[in-house]
Image (cartoon, rainbow, N blue to C red; front, side):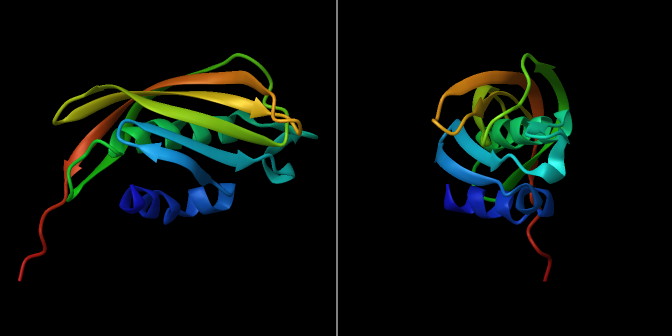
Length: 140
């Protein structure tokens, strides 16, 4: 799980969003991003792009948690459904594997807006497909 977290947190977008892992285990990942004015379309309300990013990172990281060493993955298809405004102090995204296979992994995430008291409101759900890629060994 440490290697997975290192790969995700090395991505410039993850760092820009302030993404951090709350929990990670095989087939399941929970991440958070703070609500930042830089990503809001009105005060305190995140734009859909940031909501999508949180959902995508959580779902595809969950898919990546099932891969053997030497493999990586990448998003190839997604569908995001926004169900409520993303207002609060942070977003919490819980990713999970729906079905893992050698070439493709279907994964999903639910995204919650979390207020200052810690109450969660579902604001989006995502279904995604990740392509599993075996990294070629370096040639001598």
